[in-house]
Image (cartoon, rainbow, N blue to C red; front, side, top):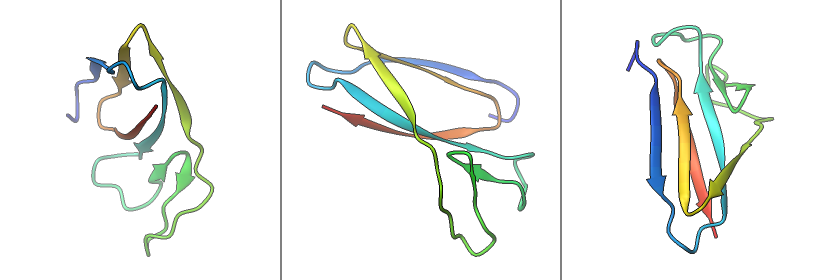
Length: 79
């Protein structure tokens, strides 16, 4: 959503212990410049290097995420 953030909570299951996140950010939803994936720029030709993954904590069998408005994230869950 372009104007509303989302707080997401979901059960992780008993076999998942951690995960990681890559955030997709940019100056606007239609931006072609200044787009970052994992804090690293994405070139016009789609090339991309140097991303930084954020750790995702799983506590008491639950995952909680905050997704700011006008952004997206990729989430990996690992056991």
